[in-house]
Length: 296
Image 1 (cartoon, rainbow, N blue to C red):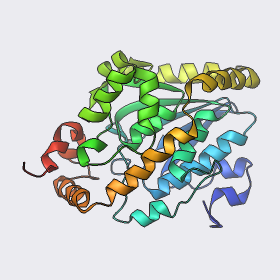
Image 2 (image 1 turned 180 degrees about the vertical axis):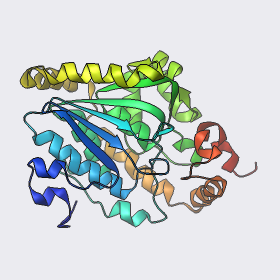
Image 3 (image 1 turned 90 degrees about the vertical axis):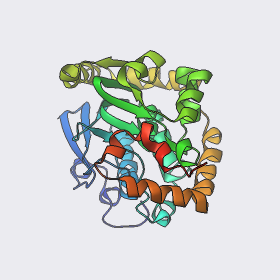
């Protein structure tokens, strides 16, 4: 984003932009109507300012491709789909992303644009998706998850902040008020079976069959009429998506609470326990986030 000449947005919107040397994702195009995006940011697929910038560029390509019907987002790491956001000890990098075409902060902007894009977005979830990772899958149109290997959650309240990417609005519409409050306030993980029961995901699929079943759905959608898909989705969007104005205050509160000394100290305690690394903490973050709380 911005005026960096190395961004794919500054090199046209043709096929060459799709083959740009992305650093946090890999892109495959099985057919003109079908794109597969694979998150590949070792060790645990954290979301950083670079990830946000690349996804923003990618959504721009998705929006403007008249041949594209469906995009599948999966992960190269079977244990971590999108772990969560990592400020990389430099929150100014996130702030410097600025706003996107909607006028919203870059993170909210790409989520809103993905939800409104005239293509079907599918999250093929294997591994952990928490915090901003959960916010991303909630912005996708369809969510299919591994029955045996999925953990979803919004752990932010457990670290002393407000979730910033709109899960209050999206979860409330998907799972209802009570279950949304449980997910957000208890801040623990949900496995695939519970996520399906609650409506967090469309359905869970046996891990060994997930790739094939998602590919079958995507291949089917890729053959349908683009306008029929886009218009039908737009009518569902009209009655289900949150207004932009719903999303802005929570992100402002996230930034405000994140800057408090108490929250910074809690983040440091989590990092000492293994945050942002392939660690036991990250694998069981929903359960273990309380370990970083100060003694009562």
